[in-house]
Length: 423
Length: 85
Image 1 (cartoon, rainbow over the protein chains, first blue to last red):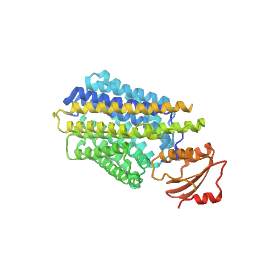
Image 2: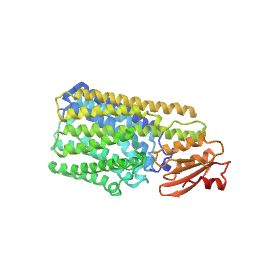
Image 3: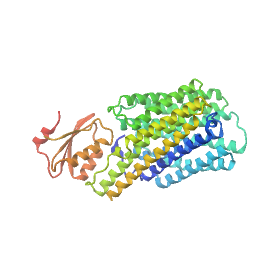
Image 4: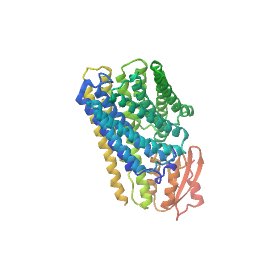
């Protein structure tokens, strides 16, 4: 990323991405609350109502919420193309995402067609607003080619995930039957985790890994082929599922999963070869997330418990990676906006805080430690159900999320304090 | 002797932070030489607004940027002495 392209004229107001980033940890805490409350019942099977509720609280409330905020922030920077009416789009998307996630999760947990359909309706509307607005910006995008392609594919994957989700809710709420229902659920999961999350992580990773950790670039063959191949694998799985060949559909998703493992291995290799040997909390999170992704693929390919694959992907990657990125992105944006404010006000006599001072590294590492305990306990609870580790895992997830909230709020209040000094 | 600040191995935005700190700490009128791994375009914009001039030499992943207050340009001899090897 050329920071020369970072222009405050194009970047959205800091409140837009921060609103998404500050609310997201509360959903992870809520998921932890359900795990603590329901205990062993959650991870007995991926099909239990409460497991579905926890999955959507994490996938939509935490992961998608952060990804939406990051997309609105990063499009102007990485792709050189601002999102039109970004404040209104951000607010509407977030409000509907919050309402939809809570309603859908309540519908899964307690049943009730009204909750499920309200949730699906709100999510459908919120994601449509986001997809149209971001799609318009991506249509005009000029930035780094591979990243723009990955962002377009990720947005297409979000569209497919949402459409499949709406179809599944219609089946559940309408009481009708769908042949190969489990296969369609797997497809929804595949497009969501490997497509929407996986491909976006790759596209953004190509830029932020070399930039923030001063590593060599990713190999050009990987940047050119990884995202399109992952999408092709998911597309093949969709065609096979639609034609009733669900047994073969799994191979299409296998291709996407292997691509992501290659990306994970390349990321660990880049980070190992970074110029500066300092190990910060973002790097620790990247490492644990890439290892969790590889372990998830291994469990899946060797026919291990689907619940363990789910925990590794959702908590290991879906909670871990965005958490690590937030500890870098929020201080960076705070510093960046203050820097530009200083120039605009010509207040060069004011010394600005360094980026690292917005979130103290020691406290962030403690948060990472609590998160690792949560991941370990929940992975063990999913691997060996009935040994009583779900509740401690849920409690650790609550603690990690609340600690994260507190650190992110510290960053936000630090920004506001210094901004006042510049006025 | 012009002080030299090497920011080649630092992660963004540390190079910019260190350069601004160093400029603030310099005795009035003194120049500063910065070693950078790329051309720091965002820095140029700031320097212009803050009343500094600069001269950049280098290529690939090694750039030397000599920065001085606009009202106190370095003499030819001084800037040559300041070029690190």
